Image (cartoon, rainbow, N blue to C red; front, side, top):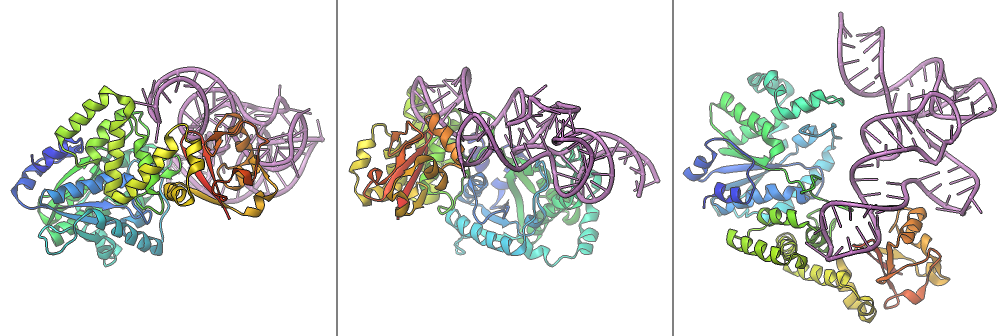
Amino acid sequence: MNLIEELRWRGMVQDIMPGTEEQLLKEMTSAYVGFDPTADSLHIGSLVPILLLVHLQRAGHKPFALVGGATGMVGDPSFKAEERKMLDLDTLAHNQNGIKAQLEKFLDFDPAKPNAAEMVNNFDWFKEISFLDFIRDTGKHITVNYMMSKDSVKRRLEGDSGMSFTEFTYQLIQGYDFYHLYTAKNCKLQMGGSDQWGNIVTGTELIRRKANGEAFAFTCPLLKKADGTKFGKSERGNVWLDPQKTSPYLFYQFWVKTTDEDAKNYIKIFTFLGQEEINELIAAHDQDAGKRLLQKKLAEELTVFVHGQTELEFALKASDLLFRNDTAEVLQSLTESQLLEIMDGVPQVEVAAAELEAGKDILSFLAETNILPSKGEARKMIQNNGISINKVKVGAIDKMIDKSLLLNDKYILVQRGKNNYFLVIVK
RNA sequence: GGGCAGGUUCCAGAGCGGCCAAAUGGGGCGGACUGUAAAUCCGCUGUCUACGACUUCAGAGGUUCGAAUCCUCUCCUGCCCA
């Protein structure tokens, strides 16, 4: 099975330019994906593009990861309702380094290999180009009519928030990246999310007109959940690849909570399992969906891929303890080191021992630890039966928190709702 | 530069002098049912020293017993004309 066929059955091909498949069969081809340096870590939304590069490299082609130091300064208007805020140079540099470090975990950068991955930063070439140079040498190849005909632009023109010239320019800037990589690195293919299609095509167009060359493109579908909402956010916001930002436990939890329907798609996209194995898994899952085989497999594979085997083990242990029923007694029986090991990835909050000396009302306790945003919220949550302490439901809003509740003399496990846990450490 | 339409609580969007902490929808968060799923149903969704008090309707002033609602100026956005 060739690369494109492989990606097709996984559901990772949305649009593809004619000739792309042939090009990939013909020779080792260099291809790139761009990453936005909006934060110093990638999040799971970037996982699909990363996987595209990994598949590409496994198929013997050469991946380029482009970090958008320059484009990050402009901001892509594609399908966004509003212009985004710009980042300053220092932040950008910091973010690029973080992203680079992460990509190195997934791609093989060993220069000894002919298809070693490479990292490039478009700021490196854009910093040399003056505005006048750009509009004379590049801008004149593309008409405004052409640029305006892009869906992403049209949508913004029709909307009521307008679009700045800066944003309008974005597709040309990105197109130039492709042109540059084409001429400098013989890079003939750009991949990305389907929202990038318009920008990518502008690049191939520029290559055709300015370099008289032929370049290719394909995009993968933008992931959506079956209910149509956007993919990649948890209750606490973005799910990051950086374990400091999203612990492996929470990362694992994110995937394990996937719905049946989504899991069937995700397993193909996010794991490297083969077609047969996946079909068997899905069949087994349908036999007894309550076992959540698919979700668990998905979560395991991804946690290993991103964080490694050891971290997965911890995540599994914690999940097992926290989500089994009748664990109140188990909890009491754990030693301190067992407890800490298991709770490693659970969000932790600290409280001064003196605070609990005389006992503290639970409303203040929940609000001051930021487990809930305010006392009012805490009150409602308890009245709605949404709070547990050490796996035991709190029934009354006048409950006092004091030292008698401490596990191993210094911990309290607070649960908000069904699956939000907090380990309170008393110091 | 001129004209017009707007800026309301997370979002959309009502309200147009007291009954407004502000309709309705969405989202979010809880609960029930389950399988840490979906669907469904129920509750909550400004803060607090909580049957009451306090701070909100772009900003600053003003009119009034009383304003999100009226007036003045400012800022911002969109559309149209130049």
